[in-house]
Length: 168
Image 1 (tube, rainbow, N blue to C red):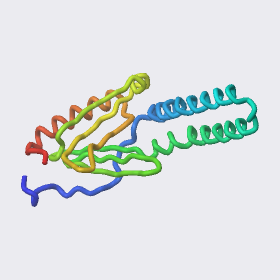
Image 2 (cartoon, rainbow, N blue to C red; image 1 turned 60 degrees about the horizontal axis):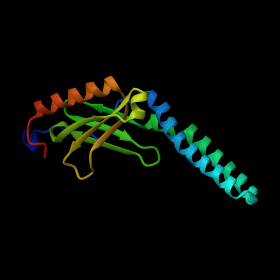
Image 3 (cartoon, rainbow, N blue to C red; image 1 turned 135 degrees about the horizontal axis):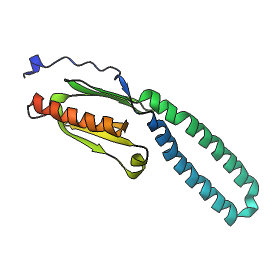
Image 4 (cartoon, one colour; image 1 turned 180 degrees about the horizontal axis):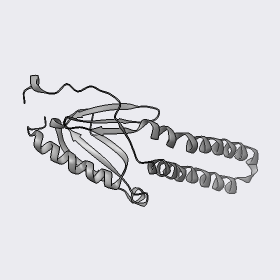
């Protein structure tokens, strides 16, 4: 396929949302970080009880920030994170403060990987990484149901074999 016969690909919002379980996963993962911070503050209070007013103020601010973060971030990410693939391209959209929308032509795909950490396995989720020769790095789709991720990896692998070429 020459450059003049390549399909015209438009950067657009992808059609599919990630798994609804990703919201619970993101919430639980963020909560672990907040629990660590609250535990550190409890140790701080135990070690230096003389500054009780400062401890209570910092603890109150921490709790407010934690509740806001846990209530807003997972839902916001769920509304933003999207993905789609066609015979010509893979489309992704991710982020919550910094949002990124990317497209990778199937003919440029070099590898397709699926990965799951122990915490993701607890929620039945997986991530798919599509690597191209792009300087922007790989496209990653986080928070897919495991069967959806497996099917996506299989389909993209098949599609890249059909596309041929040297993926550069």
